[in-house]
Amino acid sequence: MTWRAWAELLRVSALFTVPGDALAGAAAVGVRPNGRTLLAVGSSLCLYEAGMALNDWADREVDAVERPHRPIPSGRLSAGAALGAAGALTGAGLVLASRAGRPALAVASALSVTVWSYDLYFKHTAGGPAAMAAARGLDLVLGAVATGSGAVRGGRRPVLASAAVLSAHTYAVTSVSRHEAQGGSTAVPLAALAATIGLGALATRGARGAGVRAVPEASDPAPRSVRGRGRGLPRLSLSPRGSGGLPPVSGRGGAGEIPRPSPRPPAPRTPLTPAHLATTALAAAYIRTAAKPLLHAALNPSPPLTQRAVGGGIRAMIPLQATLAARTGAGATALAVMALVPLARKLARKVSVT
Image (cartoon, rainbow, N blue to C red):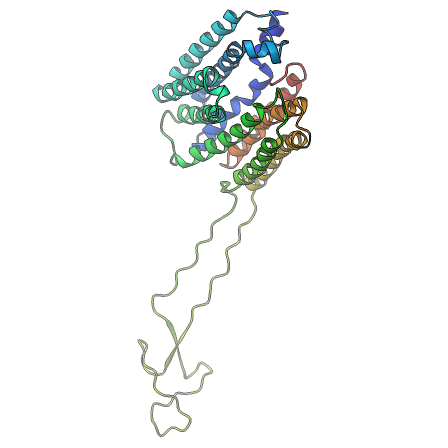
C-alpha cells in the first residue's frame, strides 16, 4: 500500500519524539505554551519529516544493499517522490516558523540547513553525530524563541542547558546508529550507556523548586561583649593589688569585657518538593528506556540488538524532554509530553522508528 510505504519512509512512529523539543524549550523560558509554541511544533514536525524523506533519498544506493525492504529500493516509492516530499516539507516548516516571528524563522532556517547538510554530507563522516545533535538542540531553541517571541525570559542559560542535554543524548544515539546495519561495536553502546546515566543525573540538578536556599543571618557588625559582673563570670580586677586578678582587657566595649563569639547558624536543609520528585522520577524513566537495550547491544553487538538500542534511544527522548520541562517547574507540560509515550509505543509496533 502507498500509505504504508510513506509511513515507513517518514518513520511516522518517531514523530511523537518531536513535539517535546518545542515544549521543553517553552518551559526553559518560563512561559506557558501558546499559539506560537504550536507553530514551532508544526515547523519541527515538518522539518523532521523532511529529514526522514531526504535521508532515504540520499541513502537509496546503500539501502539497496543493506536494507532492500525500504520503500525506495523496494520500488514502492520513487526517489523523485521522496526528494519532492523533502523539499515541500522543508518549505512548509519554514512558513510555519515565519508565522511565529522572525527570530523563530531564523532558527528554523538554521535547523533546515543543518538537516539537509547532515543527510547530504555529514551523515557518513565523523561529524555526523555532531550535526544530528546540533539539529535537536536547535529544535529545542526554536520552541523557546517562538514561545517567547524572540525574548528569552530568565536569561539564555536555562535554554542552552536544556539544549545541551538533549544534544548530548542525540549525539550518543546517533553514534550507536552508525553500527546498526553491521553491528560489531561494544565500546559505542557502552559509552552511550554511560552518557545516558550521566545525563539522567545531570538533568535532575538545579530543578526549580527542588529546594529552598537558606540565607544565613547577618552577624553583628561588632563582637558582642559580656561584662564580668552579673554574667556568672568572676569580677575582673584592674588593680595589681587584687590577688588572682587578670590583666586588664582593652576593647571597644571598654575594660573588663570579653568578646563572645556569635553562634553558628544551623546548616541549611534542602527539602524535597513535588518538582524535584517529579524530575527524579522522569529521569529514572528516561534511563530505564534507553539503558536496557544499550546494555544488551553492548553484551551482544549484533545488528538486531543494535537497532533495538537505537530505537530505545529515540523513544527515550520523550521522558528526557519531560524531565527537562519538569526541572523548570513546568509540571503540566511534562505530563503533556509523557502522554505521547503510549501513542509512540503503539505506533512503533506497526512502523519501525529506525
